[in-house]
Amino acid sequence: MTYRLRVQNEAGESADESPAIPDPAHSPSVALPPGRYRWRVEALDASGRVAAVRAPSGFAISSNAIEPPWIPAATLLARVPREQPRLMFPGAELESVRATLETTRREAFPSLRQAAQKAIQLTPMSEPDYDRISDPAARRLAYTESFRQARRLDEAMVALALMYLLSSERRYGEAARPVC
Image 1 (cartoon, one colour):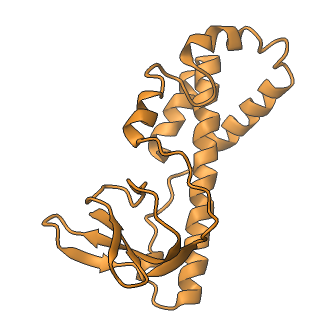
Image 2 (cartoon, helix red, strand yellow):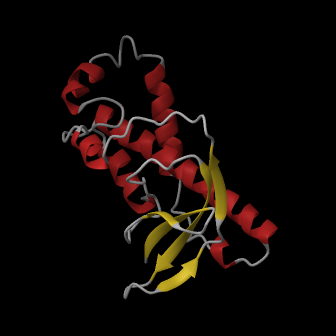
């Protein structure tokens, strides 16, 4: 599946439309003027046909809204360091961070190890199915639970990755494979 975001103004005219993208996250290419808008996401099948549509939602931009500075996504991505890791610190600093594990990070490092040990026990979450639930209240509860599980796995992946980088113990890196 790919996704397309459509934004319409109050008159029903197109205000922004994303291309077909693999992830339902889109940053518009323009700042929208003040007004009321409706947006919806369309799921597209392999041939580009609409397979499902999220119910429209609304938002408003006030007349006194401050237009944020616009930086194209390509410019922002060009600023991301190519070296790994880059989640917590640049890769070039890895050895200096490791050197502090017995001094300034002496109290924090065992907490990281404990979080990584807990993370080793986690298993992959099952494929969410909240989108197939017709009752809105039950669907919201199922979505909330799926989101909670995904956040827990995200936090576990951070702990495992950081512990692997700092300790060089392969078991932490290996534990992340089945979960991600």
